[in-house]
Amino acid sequence: MSLQSLDEHKLADYWQEAQAVRETFPELFDNSITSHYVEVPITYSQDGTVVHGIIDRLIVDTDSIHLIDYKTHRVDENSDLPAFCQQFREQLTLYAQGIQRIFPDKAIRTSVLLTAIPRLLDLTTT
Image (tube, rainbow, N blue to C red; front, side):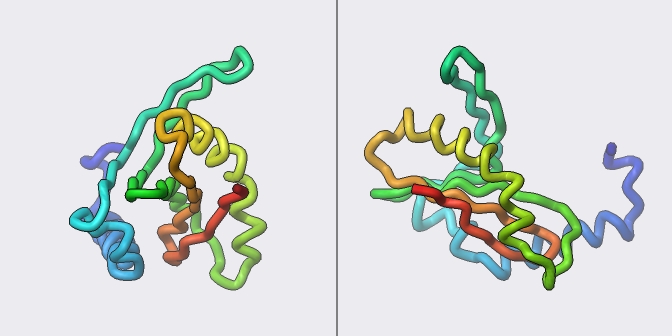
């Protein structure tokens, strides 16, 4: 979808959604406290397979890393959100394994940020 094909109403909806996410989770966007990276490409080989992806947000702190994947799905707040997010566990686990190679001494937390609601769900397994 190109910007030319977006009408002003739809663009305004996207802007409001982004603003709601920033207001709900200001700590995820405060670049003055920790190092933040967006759209981080990751590629590595694991067991003969090339793993490639784009990490939406990576927050690097002194002792830990928070890896966040944005999902724009329109989900019902009353649905089983943890169950819905399980479908992304493998993706985030692969991202975390790649980042662990770069930062072997840091704990890694993985989360899905559902932008439409907005809700942050932890998927950390370690």
